[in-house]
Length: 101
Image (cartoon, rainbow, N blue to C red; front, side, top):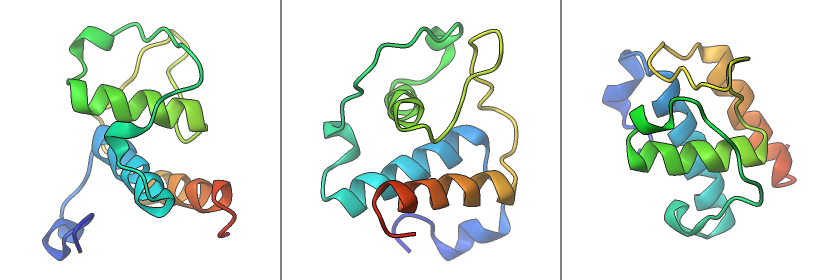
């Protein structure tokens, strides 16, 4: 309930929120705070200046873990709604990375 409150199940989430959620799940399951996670690679994100800092950090971690991807022009389109399929695919990837799937 702390990560995804029941009241949030009736609303849509955008891609930024979905990506943040799966990174939080990864961090929680790993026993580390999301803020303490550090990427192993450097990536250029075309529209990085437009992404809020807390989202940006989680996006970079998600990219590093292979949970999400950039557009062909290297930008991140986080404003659009995430489908249930996208969110579940990212959650399953987290569980797979942790050996729990």
